[in-house]
Image (cartoon, rainbow, N blue to C red; front, top):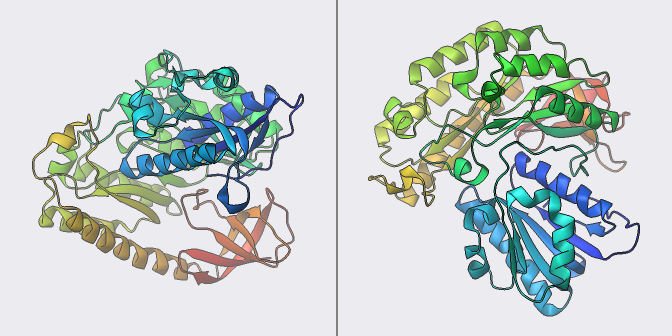
Length: 457
C-alpha cells in the first residue's frame, strides 16, 4: 500500500479509503482513479487509522492478480477491509484492478462481503460506481469490455513522490509467454499515439516531475501496432524536447526488441539514463522455448556483450524465473553460471507459479516448491556477492544523484542513474542540503549492503 495525505473534498460527499497494490502499470490506474474520486468531491485517505482500522464510507482496493503471491496479498487486503465493514467502521468495499478483471464475479465467492467489483475498462467511471455502490443494497459487477484503444492517463493524483512518475506508453501484450497471465488480463498490445504520450509527459513535468520512468508490458514494441518504425526511439526523442525534464528511464525492455537504433538513441541522448531493464526470464534454450520466448542464449549473451562495449557505464537489470516446469539441475546450473558471468547490476528472481489458464501450468515436470526455494536462494546469494562487489568498487567515485527524501533527523535518500525507484537499491546521502527532486553531486564513501553511502560535495 502506498501512502499519501488525505485530499480534502469540495462538497463533503463522504470518505474513500484507497489501497493501491501491484506493478507500476497498476499504480498509474490507481492515480487515475484517485483523480476521478477527488474531482467528485470525496475525501480520500490511503492509510487506515489506529489499530489498522479503516474508517471510511467506502474502501477501494485496486488489486494485482498476476501471480499467486499478488493474489494472496490482494485477498488479504480485501478481507481486512471486509472485517472493518463488519465491525461497522466501513460501509462498502469495492475491488478493482487485475484480480477483478481476471476472476470476475468469482471474486464475490472468494471474499464474501465485497459490494462491487470493477473491471479495468471501467477505471475512469470509479466515482460514479462509488456513488451507485453507496446507495445499493446488493453486490454489483461493473466489468464491461476492455477498450480497443489504450486509455488516456492524463489527469492523475500521484502517489509517487511529486518529482518522479511512471509514464505508460502502451497496454497489453501480444507475446503470450506460457507462464504469463497478462494478455488474458490486460488484452492485446495497444500503443498510445505519440502526441498523447507527449501531452501526458508535459502535464507531469509542469506539475514538478523531473524523472519519467517509461513503462509498458513490452516497451520495445512501442508503435509496432501503429506502423511506426523504430517507435520507441522516435518517442523518446520527442520526450527529450520537454523543458524541465531531466531523466528518462526505460523499463521493461524486451530483449529481442533492443535494436542498434535504440542503443544509439540512448547513447546519444543527454536525458535518457544509461539503464537497461531487460527481463530475460532464463538462459537455457529449451526452457526459453518452453516459455515461448523468442530469445536464445546466444542472442542474449551477444546483446549483453554489445551493451557492455557500447555503453560501458550502463546499469543492467534483469528478471529471472527459477523452477519452471522441467527445469533440471543442469539447466539451473547453466542459469547460475550465466548470472555469475553476466554480472548484472541488479537482478530480481521469482519462483515459478502455475497460473490457471496458462500453458505452463499444464506442462509435465512441475518442480517441487522446496527445490524452487533452494534454487531461488542460491541464485540470489550469487547475485548478492556480485552486487556487493560492484558497490565496493564504487567507493571513491563521484555520482550525480537525485534526492528522493530529506528529513531533519536522518540522512537523506536518493538515487544515481543506475537505480530505478522502488525496485533497486538507494543512495544514503550524508550532509545533504538539497530538497527532494533536486540533483546533487556526491562522492561514494561507503556501502550498506545493497545501498551506497554517499556524501554531498
